[in-house]
Image (cartoon, rainbow, N blue to C red; front, side):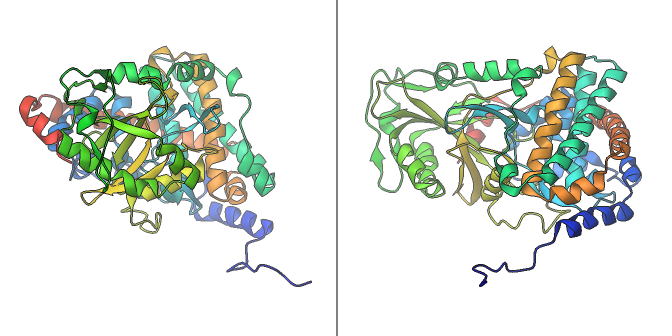
Length: 478
């Protein structure tokens, strides 16, 4: 029989892939995953953090430090450059997959799929890169410890939650390793609605409609300087005047409208972005008209990067009944890129993030794409479309355990989709040896995070933050 298609290289057999995972145990025994040698870590963690601020909006850097100084978990959220350096200073398994890169409990949540269903998955990929699978596992485990400490959950319950997360990750990886390829590609998690606190997160996401976002981010336009001043794309088409118009509500330095010239530059960047969408989604986008553009401060790790939000209205509906919000978010190289130089393969950082997100998620934002603006790379996505996440203030031992259960399955699925579940499962094995080792690492790394957090507070919190006109001028630049 004539073969119709020949792969560029001979694929590994199931036995080969399993052998690869078993050999990795000799390269790095599972018990060694517990090690955190502080002497091997970069000795000035705040220098790594400072270096990552290069090129950011200078007046917003103190905002990032303030958010990181709020708690050890807040510090952890913004300290990916530090953890990347710490992980890279230790041996790893050599088994790679697509990493989220910033795996922690607040980077999983609910959002709307193309068919209108609410899905629960990893939802932040700014640091995504191809690298050792355990990097994500260790970061998620440490985040569970820190989240539990912040919620004043006792030590034994925190450790039980971490071990449950790791046990779920391991057991699901074995299941994914045994699945046919397309069954894995289509696999959906059906038990989310029964695991506390996910039902409340899904209910919150259901309430987070575009109409609610319209109310929270915009206000009636009163001075005639709204959408009629906007120009979109090279054709310079003016948006039609609508009444009553709405514009972004100014709340500097966190949210601030751009002037017509700056807004025009942002809107022009949407033309090449549209070409990164599938044709039918380009068609949907053309049926929206831009109303206003603003600069927005988002997250913790992303503070200081340029982030724009564009408010659109559907052309065929009464004003205020069909709003769409797009976020145009600056992307720089992953914090792991210096240590994993072959891990990305992308010259455009927005493209890197888009591909990493699509590789790990079951379903992604239908308007996910990328563009460039003033020589910088950007990811484009919907802003807060039915999005919701974990409330640390409401955590209990039961909800921490339930969330750990979901985190294990979700992260395992993402790694299995984008990597080799057979090799990973073979390395993990069926005992809890890997689980116990990573728990030891997570406890030690949570302690290190608290020490680094204390150092940040001593060095930066007392410094006055510039604001007012200076901050406004800096933020408005495109």
